[in-house]
Image 1 (tube, rainbow over the protein chains, first blue to last red):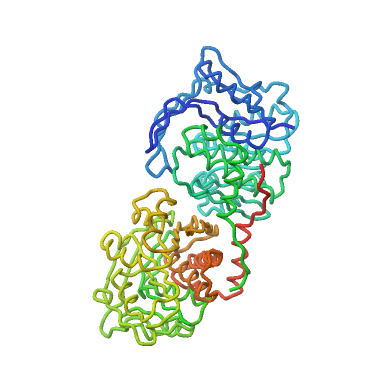
Image 2 (image 1 turned 90 degrees about the horizontal axis):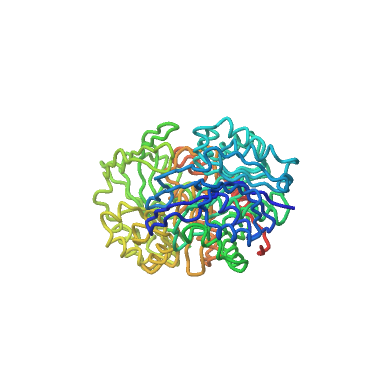
Length: 308
Length: 308
Protein backbone atom coordinates (compact mmCIF):
# COMPACT_ATOMS: atom_id res chain seq x y z
CA UNK A 1 0.00 0.00 0.00
CA UNK A 2 1.48 3.36 -0.95
CA UNK A 3 0.64 6.97 -1.78
CA UNK A 4 2.30 8.56 -4.77
CA UNK A 5 2.63 12.34 -4.62
CA UNK A 6 3.43 14.50 -7.64
CA UNK A 7 4.19 18.16 -7.03
CA UNK A 8 6.85 20.81 -7.33
CA UNK A 9 9.75 21.00 -4.89
CA UNK A 10 11.06 24.53 -4.96
CA UNK A 11 12.40 27.71 -3.41
CA UNK A 12 10.00 30.51 -2.49
CA UNK A 13 10.60 34.09 -1.51
CA UNK A 14 7.57 35.33 0.34
CA UNK A 15 6.57 38.78 1.53
CA UNK A 16 3.62 39.23 3.86
CA UNK A 17 2.54 42.19 6.00
CA UNK A 18 4.40 40.39 8.82
CA UNK A 19 7.79 39.99 7.20
CA UNK A 20 9.83 38.51 4.40
CA UNK A 21 11.36 35.06 3.99
CA UNK A 22 14.04 34.63 1.31
CA UNK A 23 14.51 31.44 -0.67
CA UNK A 24 12.79 29.17 1.79
CA UNK A 25 11.69 25.64 0.99
CA UNK A 26 8.40 25.44 -0.87
CA UNK A 27 6.52 23.75 -3.70
CA UNK A 28 3.26 21.84 -3.82
CA UNK A 29 5.01 18.46 -3.54
CA UNK A 30 6.84 19.56 -0.40
CA UNK A 31 3.67 20.73 1.33
CA UNK A 32 1.61 17.72 0.28
CA UNK A 33 4.34 15.32 1.44
CA UNK A 34 4.81 16.95 4.84
CA UNK A 35 1.05 17.25 5.40
CA UNK A 36 0.19 13.70 4.39
CA UNK A 37 3.11 12.26 6.38
CA UNK A 38 1.18 13.05 9.56
CA UNK A 39 -1.42 10.47 8.56
CA UNK A 40 0.31 7.92 6.37
CA UNK A 41 3.85 6.59 6.21
CA UNK A 42 4.39 4.96 2.81
CA UNK A 43 4.71 8.02 0.59
CA UNK A 44 6.61 8.25 -2.69
CA UNK A 45 7.41 11.68 -4.11
CA UNK A 46 7.79 12.32 -7.83
CA UNK A 47 9.36 15.64 -8.71
CA UNK A 48 12.48 17.43 -9.94
CA UNK A 49 15.04 19.75 -8.32
CA UNK A 50 18.43 21.18 -9.22
CA UNK A 51 21.59 20.35 -7.34
CA UNK A 52 21.16 23.64 -5.46
CA UNK A 53 18.47 22.04 -3.34
CA UNK A 54 19.66 21.44 0.25
CA UNK A 55 20.28 17.77 0.95
CA UNK A 56 19.25 18.08 4.61
CA UNK A 57 15.75 19.03 3.45
CA UNK A 58 15.58 15.86 1.41
CA UNK A 59 16.93 13.82 4.32
CA UNK A 60 14.24 15.32 6.55
CA UNK A 61 11.57 14.13 4.11
CA UNK A 62 13.12 10.67 3.95
CA UNK A 63 13.14 10.54 7.75
CA UNK A 64 9.38 11.16 7.61
CA UNK A 65 9.03 8.04 5.48
CA UNK A 66 8.90 9.83 2.13
CA UNK A 67 10.60 7.74 -0.55
CA UNK A 68 12.58 9.94 -2.97
CA UNK A 69 13.45 7.39 -5.67
CA UNK A 70 11.17 9.35 -8.01
CA UNK A 71 12.88 12.68 -7.27
CA UNK A 72 15.03 13.73 -10.22
CA UNK A 73 18.05 15.72 -8.97
CA UNK A 74 19.51 17.52 -12.00
CA UNK A 75 23.22 18.22 -11.84
CA UNK A 76 24.25 21.73 -12.81
CA UNK A 77 20.66 22.94 -12.91
CA UNK A 78 18.66 25.19 -10.61
CA UNK A 79 15.47 24.38 -8.73
CA UNK A 80 12.15 26.05 -9.51
CA UNK A 81 11.87 29.47 -7.84
CA UNK A 82 8.79 31.57 -7.07
CA UNK A 83 8.52 34.93 -5.35
CA UNK A 84 5.29 36.55 -4.26
CA UNK A 85 3.90 39.31 -2.11
CA UNK A 86 0.65 38.99 -0.15
CA UNK A 87 -1.73 41.90 0.16
CA UNK A 88 -2.88 43.14 3.52
CA UNK A 89 -5.95 40.88 3.54
CA UNK A 90 -3.69 37.81 2.99
CA UNK A 91 -6.32 36.47 0.59
CA UNK A 92 -4.70 37.74 -2.60
CA UNK A 93 -1.12 38.02 -3.77
CA UNK A 94 1.08 39.26 -6.60
CA UNK A 95 3.66 37.05 -8.25
CA UNK A 96 6.98 38.93 -8.28
CA UNK A 97 9.13 36.31 -9.99
CA UNK A 98 8.81 32.85 -11.52
CA UNK A 99 11.97 31.01 -12.62
CA UNK A 100 10.99 27.64 -14.07
CA UNK A 101 14.59 26.33 -14.23
CA UNK A 102 14.39 22.50 -13.94
CA UNK A 103 10.66 22.57 -14.64
CA UNK A 104 11.19 23.95 -18.12
CA UNK A 105 11.45 20.61 -19.87
CA UNK A 106 10.57 18.20 -17.08
CA UNK A 107 9.07 14.91 -18.19
CA UNK A 108 8.76 12.61 -15.19
CA UNK A 109 10.04 9.06 -15.52
CA UNK A 110 8.56 6.86 -12.83
CA UNK A 111 10.89 4.29 -11.25
CA UNK A 112 9.53 0.73 -11.51
CA UNK A 113 8.84 0.79 -7.74
CA UNK A 114 6.33 3.65 -8.12
CA UNK A 115 4.37 2.33 -11.07
CA UNK A 116 1.85 0.50 -8.93
CA UNK A 117 0.38 2.54 -6.10
CA UNK A 118 -2.91 2.56 -4.21
CA UNK A 119 -3.39 6.29 -3.91
CA UNK A 120 -2.23 9.11 -6.15
CA UNK A 121 -2.08 12.81 -5.35
CA UNK A 122 -1.52 14.87 -8.48
CA UNK A 123 -0.36 18.12 -6.91
CA UNK A 124 -0.30 21.35 -8.89
CA UNK A 125 1.87 20.87 -12.00
CA UNK A 126 1.46 21.29 -15.75
CA UNK A 127 -1.46 19.08 -16.87
CA UNK A 128 0.88 17.30 -19.32
CA UNK A 129 3.10 16.27 -16.39
CA UNK A 130 0.11 15.12 -14.35
CA UNK A 131 -1.14 13.09 -17.32
CA UNK A 132 2.30 11.56 -17.90
CA UNK A 133 2.34 10.22 -14.34
CA UNK A 134 -1.15 8.76 -14.70
CA UNK A 135 -0.16 7.16 -18.02
CA UNK A 136 2.94 5.47 -16.61
CA UNK A 137 1.04 3.63 -13.89
CA UNK A 138 0.54 -0.05 -14.64
CA UNK A 139 -2.77 -0.12 -12.74
CA UNK A 140 -5.21 2.64 -11.95
CA UNK A 141 -4.89 3.60 -8.27
CA UNK A 142 -7.90 3.12 -6.01
CA UNK A 143 -8.05 6.87 -5.52
CA UNK A 144 -6.74 9.75 -7.63
CA UNK A 145 -6.88 13.26 -6.16
CA UNK A 146 -5.89 16.22 -8.31
CA UNK A 147 -5.10 19.82 -7.53
CA UNK A 148 -4.60 22.51 -10.16
CA UNK A 149 -4.83 26.29 -10.56
CA UNK A 150 -6.17 29.07 -12.78
CA UNK A 151 -2.79 29.42 -14.55
CA UNK A 152 -3.36 26.10 -16.35
CA UNK A 153 -6.96 27.04 -17.14
CA UNK A 154 -5.62 30.13 -18.88
CA UNK A 155 -3.02 28.39 -21.03
CA UNK A 156 -3.87 24.68 -21.23
CA UNK A 157 -7.60 24.19 -20.64
CA UNK A 158 -7.99 21.26 -23.05
CA UNK A 159 -5.10 19.26 -21.59
CA UNK A 160 -6.34 20.11 -18.12
CA UNK A 161 -9.84 18.80 -18.88
CA UNK A 162 -8.33 15.55 -20.16
CA UNK A 163 -6.64 14.97 -16.80
CA UNK A 164 -9.71 16.07 -14.85
CA UNK A 165 -11.79 13.48 -16.73
CA UNK A 166 -9.65 10.74 -15.20
CA UNK A 167 -9.55 11.66 -11.49
CA UNK A 168 -11.80 10.89 -8.54
CA UNK A 169 -11.41 14.07 -6.54
CA UNK A 170 -10.63 17.55 -7.86
CA UNK A 171 -9.59 20.35 -5.49
CA UNK A 172 -9.72 23.96 -6.74
CA UNK A 173 -10.67 27.31 -5.29
CA UNK A 174 -13.95 29.16 -5.81
CA UNK A 175 -12.70 31.44 -8.59
CA UNK A 176 -11.18 28.46 -10.39
CA UNK A 177 -14.45 26.54 -10.09
CA UNK A 178 -16.19 29.49 -11.73
CA UNK A 179 -13.59 29.70 -14.49
CA UNK A 180 -13.62 25.96 -15.16
CA UNK A 181 -17.42 25.68 -15.27
CA UNK A 182 -18.51 29.04 -16.60
CA UNK A 183 -21.06 29.20 -13.78
CA UNK A 184 -21.04 31.78 -10.99
CA UNK A 185 -23.10 30.01 -8.31
CA UNK A 186 -20.92 27.31 -6.74
CA UNK A 187 -23.78 24.79 -6.67
CA UNK A 188 -24.17 25.13 -10.43
CA UNK A 189 -20.39 25.17 -10.98
CA UNK A 190 -20.15 21.91 -9.06
CA UNK A 191 -22.88 20.30 -11.16
CA UNK A 192 -20.97 21.15 -14.32
CA UNK A 193 -17.60 20.00 -12.99
CA UNK A 194 -18.92 16.70 -11.61
CA UNK A 195 -20.04 15.92 -15.17
CA UNK A 196 -16.44 16.32 -16.37
CA UNK A 197 -15.34 13.14 -14.62
CA UNK A 198 -14.58 13.50 -10.90
CA UNK A 199 -17.00 11.92 -8.43
CA UNK A 200 -16.01 14.47 -5.78
CA UNK A 201 -15.27 18.18 -6.04
CA UNK A 202 -13.69 20.18 -3.24
CA UNK A 203 -13.97 23.95 -3.53
CA UNK A 204 -11.39 25.65 -1.31
CA UNK A 205 -12.33 29.11 -0.05
CA UNK A 206 -9.22 29.99 1.95
CA UNK A 207 -10.10 31.69 5.24
CA UNK A 208 -13.76 30.88 4.52
CA UNK A 209 -13.33 27.10 4.59
CA UNK A 210 -14.07 24.49 1.96
CA UNK A 211 -17.04 22.74 0.37
CA UNK A 212 -17.28 19.10 -0.68
CA UNK A 213 -19.70 18.28 -3.50
CA UNK A 214 -20.76 14.72 -4.26
CA UNK A 215 -23.92 13.14 -5.59
CA UNK A 216 -24.77 12.13 -2.01
CA UNK A 217 -24.71 15.74 -0.88
CA UNK A 218 -22.70 18.75 0.16
CA UNK A 219 -20.50 19.21 3.21
CA UNK A 220 -18.95 22.37 4.55
CA UNK A 221 -15.86 22.60 6.70
CA UNK A 222 -14.93 26.02 8.10
CA UNK A 223 -11.43 27.36 8.39
CA UNK A 224 -10.44 27.83 12.02
CA UNK A 225 -10.36 31.55 12.86
CA UNK A 226 -6.75 32.12 13.95
CA UNK A 227 -5.02 34.79 16.03
CA UNK A 228 -2.28 35.12 13.43
CA UNK A 229 -2.14 34.13 9.78
CA UNK A 230 1.53 34.45 9.02
CA UNK A 231 1.93 33.00 5.52
CA UNK A 232 -0.88 31.45 3.45
CA UNK A 233 1.59 29.85 1.00
CA UNK A 234 1.02 26.12 0.77
CA UNK A 235 -2.27 26.13 2.68
CA UNK A 236 -4.15 24.57 -0.25
CA UNK A 237 -1.43 21.94 -0.76
CA UNK A 238 -1.37 21.15 2.95
CA UNK A 239 -5.14 20.81 2.84
CA UNK A 240 -4.86 18.34 -0.05
CA UNK A 241 -2.06 16.49 1.76
CA UNK A 242 -4.00 16.08 5.00
CA UNK A 243 -7.06 15.05 3.00
CA UNK A 244 -5.36 12.36 0.90
CA UNK A 245 -3.14 11.22 3.79
CA UNK A 246 -6.18 10.49 5.96
CA UNK A 247 -7.93 8.68 3.09
CA UNK A 248 -4.80 6.56 2.51
CA UNK A 249 -4.63 5.75 6.22
CA UNK A 250 -8.27 4.68 6.40
CA UNK A 251 -8.68 3.28 2.87
CA UNK A 252 -12.34 4.29 3.05
CA UNK A 253 -13.77 6.48 0.29
CA UNK A 254 -17.36 6.71 1.52
CA UNK A 255 -18.94 10.17 1.64
CA UNK A 256 -18.87 10.06 5.46
CA UNK A 257 -15.13 9.39 5.46
CA UNK A 258 -14.45 11.96 2.75
CA UNK A 259 -16.06 14.48 5.12
CA UNK A 260 -13.67 13.46 7.89
CA UNK A 261 -10.75 13.76 5.48
CA UNK A 262 -11.93 17.29 4.68
CA UNK A 263 -11.77 18.19 8.36
CA UNK A 264 -8.24 16.80 8.67
CA UNK A 265 -7.23 18.72 5.55
CA UNK A 266 -8.48 21.91 7.21
CA UNK A 267 -6.72 21.02 10.45
CA UNK A 268 -3.37 20.64 8.70
CA UNK A 269 -3.89 23.80 6.62
CA UNK A 270 -4.64 25.76 9.80
CA UNK A 271 -1.18 24.85 11.10
CA UNK A 272 0.52 25.57 7.79
CA UNK A 273 -0.39 29.27 7.75
CA UNK A 274 0.96 29.92 11.25
CA UNK A 275 4.60 30.03 10.16
CA UNK A 276 6.58 30.80 7.01
CA UNK A 277 6.92 27.87 4.61
CA UNK A 278 6.34 24.30 5.81
CA UNK A 279 8.06 24.96 9.17
CA UNK A 280 4.97 24.48 11.28
CA UNK A 281 4.01 21.31 9.40
CA UNK A 282 7.40 19.89 10.31
CA UNK A 283 7.05 20.66 14.02
CA UNK A 284 3.55 19.41 14.86
CA UNK A 285 2.84 15.96 16.29
CA UNK A 286 -0.20 13.72 16.69
CA UNK A 287 -1.18 15.41 19.94
CA UNK A 288 -1.25 18.83 18.30
CA UNK A 289 -3.38 17.47 15.47
CA UNK A 290 -5.81 15.86 17.92
CA UNK A 291 -6.13 19.05 19.94
CA UNK A 292 -6.79 21.15 16.87
CA UNK A 293 -9.25 18.63 15.48
CA UNK A 294 -11.16 19.04 18.71
CA UNK A 295 -11.20 22.80 18.17
CA UNK A 296 -12.71 22.25 14.73
CA UNK A 297 -15.33 19.87 16.07
CA UNK A 298 -16.35 22.41 18.72
CA UNK A 299 -16.56 25.13 16.08
CA UNK A 300 -18.90 22.93 14.03
CA UNK A 301 -20.82 21.28 16.85
CA UNK A 302 -24.58 21.73 16.73
CA UNK A 303 -27.43 19.73 18.16
CA UNK A 304 -30.92 20.85 17.43
CA UNK A 305 -34.44 19.60 17.11
CA UNK A 306 -35.77 20.43 13.67
CA UNK A 307 -38.74 22.52 14.62
CA UNK A 308 -39.63 26.16 14.52
CA UNK B 1 -43.92 38.28 26.71
CA UNK B 2 -43.07 40.38 23.69
CA UNK B 3 -40.32 41.26 21.23
CA UNK B 4 -39.74 44.90 20.40
CA UNK B 5 -38.18 45.55 16.99
CA UNK B 6 -36.65 48.87 16.01
CA UNK B 7 -35.66 49.32 12.38
CA UNK B 8 -36.32 51.35 9.28
CA UNK B 9 -39.41 50.75 7.12
CA UNK B 10 -38.64 52.04 3.68
CA UNK B 11 -38.70 51.91 -0.10
CA UNK B 12 -35.75 50.40 -1.96
CA UNK B 13 -34.80 50.45 -5.61
CA UNK B 14 -32.46 47.56 -6.25
CA UNK B 15 -30.37 46.63 -9.28
CA UNK B 16 -28.69 43.25 -9.46
CA UNK B 17 -27.14 41.36 -12.40
CA UNK B 18 -30.52 39.60 -12.61
CA UNK B 19 -32.80 42.61 -12.90
CA UNK B 20 -34.12 45.75 -11.33
CA UNK B 21 -36.89 46.29 -8.79
CA UNK B 22 -38.25 49.83 -8.37
CA UNK B 23 -39.51 51.23 -5.08
CA UNK B 24 -40.17 47.90 -3.46
CA UNK B 25 -40.75 47.45 0.26
CA UNK B 26 -37.57 47.36 2.33
CA UNK B 27 -35.92 48.56 5.51
CA UNK B 28 -34.26 46.73 8.38
CA UNK B 29 -37.42 46.81 10.52
CA UNK B 30 -39.46 45.23 7.73
CA UNK B 31 -37.00 42.37 7.22
CA UNK B 32 -36.51 41.75 10.94
CA UNK B 33 -40.25 41.73 11.56
CA UNK B 34 -41.05 39.32 8.73
CA UNK B 35 -38.15 37.03 9.61
CA UNK B 36 -38.86 36.88 13.34
CA UNK B 37 -42.60 36.41 12.75
CA UNK B 38 -41.85 32.87 11.59
CA UNK B 39 -40.71 32.00 15.12
CA UNK B 40 -42.56 34.32 17.48
CA UNK B 41 -45.93 35.99 17.39
CA UNK B 42 -45.93 38.88 19.86
CA UNK B 43 -43.86 41.43 17.96
CA UNK B 44 -44.06 45.21 18.32
CA UNK B 45 -42.46 47.37 15.63
CA UNK B 46 -41.09 50.85 16.35
CA UNK B 47 -40.37 52.91 13.26
CA UNK B 48 -41.50 55.78 11.08
CA UNK B 49 -42.95 56.06 7.56
CA UNK B 50 -44.57 58.74 5.46
CA UNK B 51 -48.17 58.58 4.29
CA UNK B 52 -46.86 57.32 0.95
CA UNK B 53 -46.32 53.89 2.48
CA UNK B 54 -48.88 51.34 1.19
CA UNK B 55 -51.42 50.46 3.83
CA UNK B 56 -51.79 46.88 2.58
CA UNK B 57 -48.13 46.27 3.48
CA UNK B 58 -48.86 47.41 7.01
CA UNK B 59 -51.97 45.25 7.16
CA UNK B 60 -49.91 42.25 6.03
CA UNK B 61 -47.53 42.82 8.93
CA UNK B 62 -50.41 43.16 11.38
CA UNK B 63 -51.87 39.92 10.06
CA UNK B 64 -48.55 38.27 10.93
CA UNK B 65 -49.03 39.41 14.54
CA UNK B 66 -46.85 42.49 14.32
CA UNK B 67 -48.23 45.27 16.49
CA UNK B 68 -47.81 48.68 14.82
CA UNK B 69 -48.78 51.00 17.68
CA UNK B 70 -45.17 52.17 17.71
CA UNK B 71 -45.13 52.95 13.98
CA UNK B 72 -45.23 56.69 13.41
CA UNK B 73 -47.07 57.46 10.15
CA UNK B 74 -46.22 61.03 9.21
CA UNK B 75 -48.88 62.88 7.23
CA UNK B 76 -47.59 64.79 4.21
CA UNK B 77 -44.12 63.29 4.52
CA UNK B 78 -42.26 60.71 2.49
CA UNK B 79 -40.82 57.40 3.61
CA UNK B 80 -37.09 56.70 3.69
CA UNK B 81 -35.78 55.70 0.26
CA UNK B 82 -32.59 53.89 -0.68
CA UNK B 83 -31.33 52.83 -4.11
CA UNK B 84 -28.39 50.55 -4.71
CA UNK B 85 -26.70 48.49 -7.37
CA UNK B 86 -25.01 45.15 -6.65
CA UNK B 87 -21.79 44.18 -8.38
CA UNK B 88 -21.48 40.93 -10.28
CA UNK B 89 -20.20 39.03 -7.25
CA UNK B 90 -23.30 40.14 -5.26
CA UNK B 91 -21.04 40.65 -2.25
CA UNK B 92 -20.52 44.38 -2.72
CA UNK B 93 -22.77 47.21 -3.82
CA UNK B 94 -22.86 50.91 -4.61
CA UNK B 95 -25.40 53.24 -3.06
CA UNK B 96 -27.07 55.20 -5.86
CA UNK B 97 -29.43 57.31 -3.76
CA UNK B 98 -30.36 57.89 -0.12
CA UNK B 99 -33.36 60.07 0.70
CA UNK B 100 -33.74 60.28 4.47
CA UNK B 101 -37.18 61.99 4.35
CA UNK B 102 -39.04 61.00 7.56
CA UNK B 103 -35.80 59.77 9.14
CA UNK B 104 -34.28 63.24 9.08
CA UNK B 105 -35.53 64.31 12.48
CA UNK B 106 -37.03 61.09 13.81
CA UNK B 107 -37.05 60.75 17.57
CA UNK B 108 -39.05 57.67 18.52
CA UNK B 109 -41.69 57.98 21.21
CA UNK B 110 -42.61 54.59 22.61
CA UNK B 111 -46.29 53.99 23.37
CA UNK B 112 -46.89 52.93 26.98
CA UNK B 113 -47.66 49.40 25.77
CA UNK B 114 -44.15 48.94 24.37
CA UNK B 115 -42.16 50.27 27.32
CA UNK B 116 -41.87 46.89 28.98
CA UNK B 117 -40.74 44.08 26.73
CA UNK B 118 -38.82 40.84 27.19
CA UNK B 119 -36.69 40.96 24.07
CA UNK B 120 -35.39 43.90 22.09
CA UNK B 121 -33.97 43.91 18.58
CA UNK B 122 -32.25 47.19 17.80
CA UNK B 123 -32.12 46.97 14.02
CA UNK B 124 -29.84 49.20 11.99
CA UNK B 125 -30.65 52.86 12.77
CA UNK B 126 -28.76 55.93 13.98
CA UNK B 127 -27.16 55.06 17.35
CA UNK B 128 -29.00 58.01 18.93
CA UNK B 129 -32.32 56.46 17.89
CA UNK B 130 -31.26 53.04 19.20
CA UNK B 131 -30.23 54.63 22.51
CA UNK B 132 -33.47 56.58 22.78
CA UNK B 133 -35.48 53.34 22.56
CA UNK B 134 -33.32 51.68 25.21
CA UNK B 135 -33.69 54.72 27.48
CA UNK B 136 -37.49 54.78 27.25
CA UNK B 137 -37.90 51.23 28.47
CA UNK B 138 -39.05 51.01 32.08
CA UNK B 139 -37.16 47.74 32.61
CA UNK B 140 -34.15 46.32 30.87
CA UNK B 141 -35.28 43.49 28.55
CA UNK B 142 -33.95 39.98 29.20
CA UNK B 143 -32.15 40.11 25.86
CA UNK B 144 -30.98 43.04 23.74
CA UNK B 145 -29.65 42.29 20.24
CA UNK B 146 -28.19 45.10 18.16
CA UNK B 147 -27.30 45.43 14.50
CA UNK B 148 -25.41 48.35 13.02
CA UNK B 149 -23.22 49.21 10.05
CA UNK B 150 -19.96 50.90 9.00
CA UNK B 151 -21.82 54.13 8.14
CA UNK B 152 -22.37 54.82 11.86
CA UNK B 153 -18.78 53.89 12.67
CA UNK B 154 -17.67 56.55 10.20
CA UNK B 155 -19.80 59.38 11.55
CA UNK B 156 -20.91 58.53 15.10
CA UNK B 157 -18.43 56.09 16.64
CA UNK B 158 -18.70 57.45 20.19
CA UNK B 159 -22.50 57.32 20.28
CA UNK B 160 -22.34 53.89 18.71
CA UNK B 161 -19.98 52.58 21.38
CA UNK B 162 -22.30 53.88 24.08
CA UNK B 163 -25.15 51.78 22.70
CA UNK B 164 -22.88 48.76 22.15
CA UNK B 165 -21.85 48.89 25.81
CA UNK B 166 -25.45 48.22 26.80
CA UNK B 167 -26.43 45.26 24.58
CA UNK B 168 -26.10 41.49 24.96
CA UNK B 169 -25.56 40.51 21.34
CA UNK B 170 -23.96 42.60 18.59
CA UNK B 171 -24.27 41.56 14.93
CA UNK B 172 -21.91 43.14 12.38
CA UNK B 173 -20.03 41.98 9.31
CA UNK B 174 -16.33 41.11 9.12
CA UNK B 175 -15.18 44.47 7.77
CA UNK B 176 -17.20 46.26 10.42
CA UNK B 177 -15.68 44.07 13.15
CA UNK B 178 -12.24 45.10 11.89
CA UNK B 179 -13.20 48.78 11.79
CA UNK B 180 -14.78 48.72 15.25
CA UNK B 181 -11.89 46.88 16.91
CA UNK B 182 -8.87 48.04 14.92
CA UNK B 183 -7.81 44.37 14.66
CA UNK B 184 -7.57 42.44 11.41
CA UNK B 185 -7.81 38.84 12.66
CA UNK B 186 -11.42 38.14 13.58
CA UNK B 187 -10.45 36.25 16.74
CA UNK B 188 -8.61 39.32 18.00
CA UNK B 189 -11.36 41.66 16.80
CA UNK B 190 -13.87 39.60 18.78
CA UNK B 191 -11.75 39.78 21.93
CA UNK B 192 -11.68 43.56 21.71
CA UNK B 193 -15.40 43.91 20.96
CA UNK B 194 -16.49 41.54 23.73
CA UNK B 195 -14.70 43.88 26.14
CA UNK B 196 -16.91 46.75 24.93
CA UNK B 197 -19.98 45.28 26.60
CA UNK B 198 -21.76 42.55 24.62
CA UNK B 199 -21.54 38.99 25.92
CA UNK B 200 -22.01 37.65 22.38
CA UNK B 201 -20.66 38.84 19.06
CA UNK B 202 -21.94 37.57 15.71
CA UNK B 203 -19.74 38.30 12.71
CA UNK B 204 -21.72 37.97 9.48
CA UNK B 205 -19.74 36.99 6.41
CA UNK B 206 -22.48 36.98 3.76
CA UNK B 207 -22.13 34.02 1.42
CA UNK B 208 -19.38 32.69 3.71
CA UNK B 209 -21.62 32.20 6.74
CA UNK B 210 -21.39 33.65 10.23
CA UNK B 211 -19.34 33.26 13.39
CA UNK B 212 -20.57 33.43 16.98
CA UNK B 213 -18.05 34.50 19.62
CA UNK B 214 -18.69 34.04 23.34
CA UNK B 215 -16.51 33.33 26.33
CA UNK B 216 -17.66 29.69 26.14
CA UNK B 217 -16.29 29.36 22.62
CA UNK B 218 -16.77 29.96 18.93
CA UNK B 219 -19.39 28.54 16.60
CA UNK B 220 -19.54 28.69 12.83
CA UNK B 221 -22.64 28.44 10.70
CA UNK B 222 -22.17 28.26 6.92
CA UNK B 223 -24.38 29.96 4.40
CA UNK B 224 -26.25 27.44 2.28
CA UNK B 225 -24.79 27.36 -1.24
CA UNK B 226 -27.73 28.32 -3.44
CA UNK B 227 -28.54 27.85 -7.10
CA UNK B 228 -29.57 31.48 -7.41
CA UNK B 229 -28.85 34.50 -5.26
CA UNK B 230 -31.29 37.01 -6.57
CA UNK B 231 -31.06 39.95 -4.17
CA UNK B 232 -28.86 40.08 -1.05
CA UNK B 233 -30.73 43.12 0.34
CA UNK B 234 -32.04 42.43 3.82
CA UNK B 235 -30.12 39.16 4.29
CA UNK B 236 -28.36 40.47 7.39
CA UNK B 237 -31.62 41.84 8.84
CA UNK B 238 -33.42 38.57 8.09
CA UNK B 239 -30.58 36.72 9.80
CA UNK B 240 -30.98 38.92 12.88
CA UNK B 241 -34.75 38.47 12.77
CA UNK B 242 -34.59 34.69 12.60
CA UNK B 243 -31.98 34.69 15.35
CA UNK B 244 -33.89 36.88 17.79
CA UNK B 245 -37.25 35.33 16.88
CA UNK B 246 -36.01 31.86 17.79
CA UNK B 247 -34.50 33.13 21.05
CA UNK B 248 -37.79 34.84 21.93
CA UNK B 249 -39.70 31.62 21.17
CA UNK B 250 -37.41 29.47 23.34
CA UNK B 251 -36.51 32.08 26.01
CA UNK B 252 -33.17 30.26 26.41
CA UNK B 253 -29.96 32.26 26.10
CA UNK B 254 -27.48 29.46 26.73
CA UNK B 255 -24.54 29.15 24.33
CA UNK B 256 -26.05 25.92 22.95
CA UNK B 257 -29.32 27.67 22.17
CA UNK B 258 -27.59 30.74 20.74
CA UNK B 259 -25.94 28.33 18.28
CA UNK B 260 -29.34 26.98 17.25
CA UNK B 261 -30.61 30.54 16.84
CA UNK B 262 -27.63 31.22 14.56
CA UNK B 263 -28.65 28.31 12.34
CA UNK B 264 -32.24 29.57 12.14
CA UNK B 265 -30.93 33.04 11.31
CA UNK B 266 -28.98 31.54 8.42
CA UNK B 267 -31.99 29.51 7.32
CA UNK B 268 -34.18 32.60 7.09
CA UNK B 269 -31.44 34.62 5.38
CA UNK B 270 -31.05 31.87 2.77
CA UNK B 271 -34.69 32.33 1.81
CA UNK B 272 -34.47 36.11 1.83
CA UNK B 273 -31.90 36.30 -0.99
CA UNK B 274 -33.91 34.09 -3.33
CA UNK B 275 -36.33 36.84 -4.36
CA UNK B 276 -36.37 40.62 -4.54
CA UNK B 277 -37.20 42.35 -1.28
CA UNK B 278 -38.97 40.48 1.53
CA UNK B 279 -41.21 38.58 -0.92
CA UNK B 280 -39.78 35.16 -0.19
CA UNK B 281 -39.92 35.76 3.57
CA UNK B 282 -43.62 36.45 3.20
CA UNK B 283 -44.32 33.24 1.29
CA UNK B 284 -42.50 30.57 3.30
CA UNK B 285 -44.17 28.45 5.97
CA UNK B 286 -43.03 26.23 8.84
CA UNK B 287 -42.60 23.24 6.52
CA UNK B 288 -40.24 25.17 4.25
CA UNK B 289 -38.21 26.30 7.25
CA UNK B 290 -37.99 22.74 8.58
CA UNK B 291 -36.88 21.38 5.23
CA UNK B 292 -34.22 24.01 4.81
CA UNK B 293 -33.01 23.57 8.39
CA UNK B 294 -32.47 19.92 7.53
CA UNK B 295 -30.39 20.98 4.53
CA UNK B 296 -28.22 23.09 6.84
CA UNK B 297 -27.82 20.25 9.32
CA UNK B 298 -26.71 17.90 6.52
CA UNK B 299 -24.22 20.49 5.28
CA UNK B 300 -22.72 20.72 8.78
CA UNK B 301 -23.06 17.09 9.83
CA UNK B 302 -19.83 15.40 10.85
CA UNK B 303 -19.11 12.43 13.06
CA UNK B 304 -15.52 11.50 13.61
CA UNK B 305 -13.27 9.82 16.10
CA UNK B 306 -10.56 12.24 17.15
CA UNK B 307 -7.51 10.27 16.13
CA UNK B 308 -4.94 10.49 13.41
